Image (cartoon, rainbow, N blue to C red; front, side, top):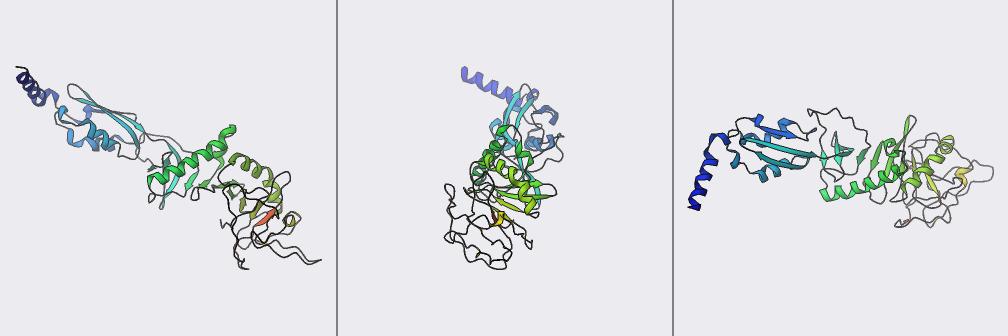
Amino acid sequence: MGFATYLMAKRFLLHDDRFVIQSSSAIGFEGNTHVTRAQLLGIFGQDVERNIFTVSLEERRFELERLPWVEHATVMRLLPNRMRVSIVERTPVAFVRQGSRIGLVDAQGVLLDMPIDAKTSEHYSFPVVTGISAADALSTRAARMKIFERFTSELDGSGDHISQELSEVDLSNPEDVKALIPDHSAEILVHFGEDDFLDRYRRFKEHLSEWRATYPKLSSVDMRYERQVVLEMPPGANVPAGPSANSAVGDSSAVDAAPPAKPGASAKPSAHTVAQNAVPTKKQIVPKAKPHSAAAKNHPVGVKAPDTTQYHPPQVVHP
């Protein structure tokens, strides 16, 4: 008797017209701002005019979560013939270049297209992240975005929202986070290394004006090392001679240094100027540099900043 009752109930539920999803208006969505209703209905198109009990909630949830913007989805039946879908969307944290287009990326490294037709008027104010791409494994992108999160969190830890000042953050080298920082009508590439981000940013900002006064075409600053900063000029820039440019002593054991200037001659900074006792920070190894060509594209200059340690680079950076 019990089994017969079960069969009768099942037949009733599967064949009674009252349990048929009559139209797409019977499927409700909530929580979606970047994903359009049309995109979501694309998952349920085959379910219209079907019995609600023949729709697999688990399969629909899985299909919804395959949409890049959908982080989590919940699918429910509302008897007799309606369905409700709750969406939790991903939160973008940066812009990212995807080929010739600009997209978005979340903290887990999931790449997102810019929303076009979604019901959102949200305006983003993010730096552009480079050093990640769709060709990278998701685990690789996720690891690099953790570095980005640590970098921006440390910069913003003082409450000054410093990360909003950044134009671009390069994550291609996990041991050297690089950022483009706007400075008047130009941008300066700053090497932050892998730690002490806020301290290095503050020292960069503290001495930027004096560096700019001596080197108006300054294009890059390497802040990674303990006893010397390195300033770099764009290709073809004239590098002025000055006391600060000659304050560091060449150390041929690290990189090639320029020979001392002849008496009475104008001092010309070398392509690599290194403090004699410069010591790299942890996890940084300073290799011996190849002899520097006279046709070098950049002109980095070692500068001794007052009340700061000096740094030397493991390699020349070409911005």
